[in-house]
Length: 356
Image 1 (tube, helix red, strand yellow):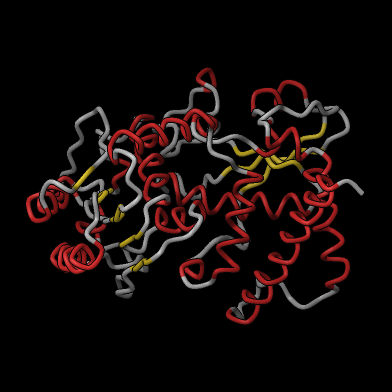
Image 2: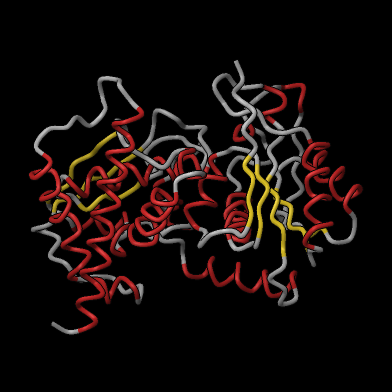
């Protein structure tokens, strides 16, 4: 057997092992009715192997970001939407759709994610099929397919609402095996567009001037502060984070401190307190959130139908994932960071409970 083929097989065996660990951990911590029960595991993992077989056979083309020439007539596609949560943000959708991709791969489908047919934060709450699938502005579909081509060419399509899944959770902050699984899975089945990855690399070179000694900070404000949404994580106070930043900076003497936040007030206080080491990446469009309205950020007029805002958000998450150390509020974006990262020297995710 050739070395390259052995490497491919090892890669997919790792994914299968990680699947097993994910399921075992999930069953150990969940007792509700929709959990995966300990039924015929042999058949279960036969299905997993079948799901990954396609990727194994086409790994070279996938790694080179080449579209795979498949017979559209003999392949079953699952077109998946999340209409039940139209105001959910980019990384909320990202982590949920990872679970959906996993679910339908195991059922023998090629999963395709769509944000065209219903109002949502990605399409700016405007249904306009002529503009294409906005999700594909940021991410590739599994195996390089595109939504419009599937609709035009495929003979076997079924449509599903994304639900009843096992997805990345806060467990990823503490569980290295979980992080490894979802990192590998995301790279394989929901890769970020190459042009966005390249842009993030250029930004990193420009703002950090070649230094790796960078502390990343992710903070959440605006609608979280105004609405205090029930069952959502409570973000840390800015004063607490500034204190922690100073302690870490005294210890490690960072060259730069990269701050990502959608909240102008938090950003102003942070920069004023920390000083010239702070670097930020901002949208070209000036945004303003009216705290008195207590509306979700996605419904704010400055953020609706703003592809650039979501792109800047994604770039921020990519850059944070490549920092040496990290301080972060507990958010969907933070889960995204841990999916994308290769690891941190030191990190702290603030665990302050949930709004009631």
